[in-house]
Image (cartoon, rainbow, N blue to C red; front, top):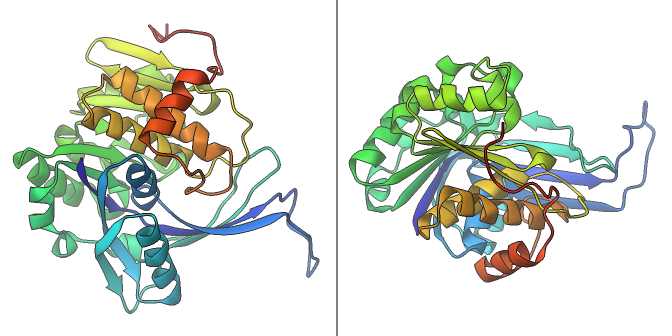
Length: 317
């Protein structure tokens, strides 16, 4: 699998546990502070590399110390960063994430250079040589630009996938509709599946995305696992029962596992099982890069770990 993860790259600063932000100039002690590469492109790249894919990351970051650190973290994980462009006048995107004891993660976020990426930055020849293109955050670069990139990839026989960044409340189908006919796999979470489509039910939202042109929809639903919808078929894949430390990067890890499974020729349901395993492994520690595992370890985890729900994959209704 020769994949380019294109789009959102973020440097995350995570603190745990944080029950509340101290008032005024108050202070509080935490058990752990970590800095990791993240984002719907950057975070997905981390887990894809762990699972044995050859990964090149493309996007816009600042020519600042934050960007330098982000590049080092990606390279340390085995990700090729030569396709990243550096902006002298715009900072690298970053987030501060105070992780609650429950694993929930409110975010303080700087958009930074991600929103400056345009057609002139796209590594067209590298995409032509790839087997897979994963576009993270098409709503930030615009539906028409995203459609142009994905159409080019599809025209050269490249498998395409898309993950969304904006929360559902900020989404609309207009932000992504032009890109969907060129998207083989779209991987939103349940909030995005509802918010971007205006649907009242996740399954209905998935069908709206299919009707707009997407090939297969894989919706992550937190502790409820994932919903995989393609054509007239809909399957539930349960999450694995683990002690959750932090949910940061779990959606990106699911995307990576799912796409790695697809590249290995697995069915969408079996690919989603690998995605759920990768997400569960990441969730047991702090940050998007948590876990020292490879493809064999993730498969072994999936085979030996109890699902959170006993329900077998099948019709969600």
